[in-house]
Image (cartoon, rainbow, N blue to C red; front, top):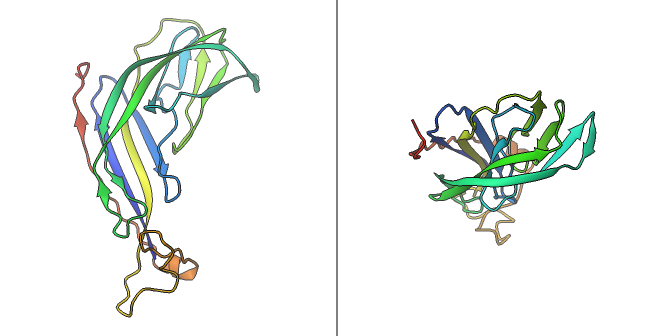
Length: 206
């Protein structure tokens, strides 16, 4: 059995944005979740901007002096972004790429009572890195900064190829693939990068 990782990268054109959102999903957990943003600090009273897969809330916790607290928040979904994104079928023996569209909601979140020094930690979900935004001193609110690059890494098991017939354990009922492991798994480890680049035109794109 060999393990194949497929990476799908999508570039979304947006003015003055530098964000990158890397998601991981796997054999038993093929979904995509987590709030991704590129702002690391916003002035007190200004909205925070993150993107989540549509239908996934922008869940977060607020910390002040390392203590979690509850603040009233207003979450406005500004718009939705459809991203052409191929997936790897994790239970297909050929690890087939399945074309599709992943929709992301762009959120503007305003906190009531947030102070300079507070830290807002968003639920990581399948994201490679957590999203944390610090609250800075009061000042003019900067223009919205949205994430623009989305990628998915999917783990898939290829079925073993053996002229003598299927290996013991291949009758596990999962697309004919074996669930065996051990030394054979490590010896057969193969990484294949499948990259698809897309540019999505938006009305606000420069």
